[in-house]
Length: 332
View 1 (tube, rainbow, N blue to C red):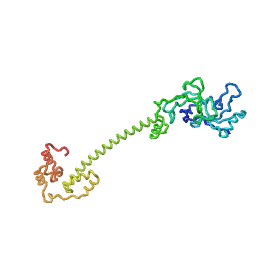
View 2: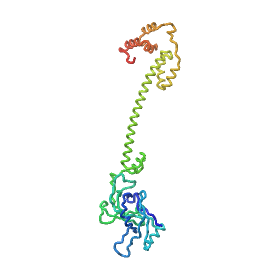
View 3: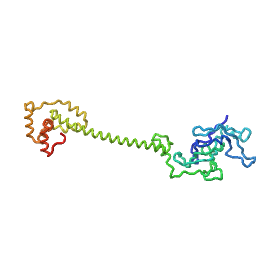
View 4: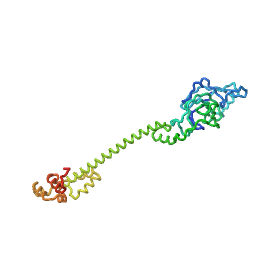
């Protein structure tokens, strides 16, 4: 049964770059799917040269992996020896020779541990069985002006030098930090920068709406407290007028309203009214008014009668107020 090999994947290799699987052109390779040993090609015509040891079948892409099945030349003793080592598990790695078309250092192609350009477009030339690869799959790139040398093949198998351009240290972001930001925004750790910026804009917009709502709620709460304070004054004054409480208890009652408006209101309403002493003595309204007219504003206040005067005799209250402060009250 043919062994399936991973020819390439999108892991960052030991040289600090990776190959975009979806960007590998396979059409030409499928027409001539050579399988070599260690990327060696016979070109001198001598007997000691290693010829192709077989070919690849069922070349396909699964997710981010490029896979193929190895078919060895059963009529070549060297190929058979390689096959036997593969079957025995002594040789396990494959490596591709790629013709680079486009490399990039854009942030969206950067991965943790990456130090060189990502190869995002390439053409598959051949695939070999190898002893040691650079990233589970030793990579061999054909010469290309993008990589610097146009006269010789560039071998990136384990132990070789790597001419793929280094990413500028100025433009390279902190990958780990970007991943943490993406995760906190509810995105995938490898989210691209535009996606992260879009999520941040949305978050800032929501924060702005929250701040505006908070200010609105704060104003509503302030207005509510002011209205309750005014109502508390009216309720306490009415209670004093009805004889429920003594005028001296006014401030303490207002303090209770500040602590718990609903409870203070309920407590005040539960106090029964006391009969007016002056009415029981038979004094009519005219007599009462006459008595009030004799008193100054300060005297009415000390006797706790201001609330009653204000309610029952508003004109007298106005005159007493103006006499005291030089102007008429505004909230009558």
